[in-house]
Length: 357
Ligand code: ADP
Image (tube, rainbow, N blue to C red; front, side, top):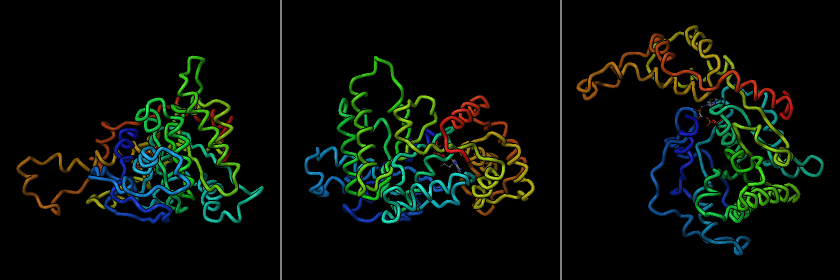
């Protein structure tokens, strides 16, 4: 579900392209987002402003089509995501503040020995809010947000992934402070055998060069946030570049309660606080994305009971309230997507390589 959601969320919002070097302004259209801040699918713009924008002189040596493609497909603007939109994960927030948000806002304070690491890895089960966190960090730090999917780097420009990585970092440098969010880093940078394809190897090397370069230049304010559901596949060279490795866990009961409360805030329901707490206890092991599906399923129940003829004429105000029974029934249809064994593997990896909290 999380990856399906992501596929449409990562569509470019090209019609809102901004001029080069402009500051990142948030929030944007509130209609772009659902209740928890995830942007909805956008219709493709007829022509992107990125296609006609002049390319800054610092990027003149690069392939202009590639520069434009990156600007069009990777520079994203989302509705502002606040910390409160992310349920739980309190332990991680101070790490984000210290390593990313404050330094991007006040690079003059965080320099020299106080200079933060350039690479931060978010790892944990799918649907736990890694993408949401990256967007929140981008909104809180007012940085330009680049969201890169492995397929953007590998499929469109076959064999040119290396050049694409170089171009991406150059475009990010022209739009500092910038956050490059790389989802599924494992598929791009995972440990590979000798049979590793030459172009993948070159792409990986270029990525390391860029990450090391972004870390060594005092004037670069680029942070790379990698996300993965499979941290075990990252080798030592990758781990070394992602200095901070933060475990994004399944939400605890209190966080699940918060997610339910937020999701049902705007619908007509008759659940008491005690019942919401009970539902949070009944959903042990559910990810944030599972909670989202679960609440959506329950919220549909009053509509499912209607005939097509009733749907045609019913007044929205007349819809019956969503009840506790609707939610307990939904539990039969939407179950947790992460197994206890999977969780154990994340815990073990976190003990070896994560930031301990
Ligand atoms: P990931 O990147 O870890 O796979 P996402 O950030 O894409 O997960 O989460 C998918 C959706 O699940 C989010 O858009 C949000 O609706 C919900 N969600 C996940 N985790 C949380 C959380 N901690 N708090 C609130 N909502 C969450």
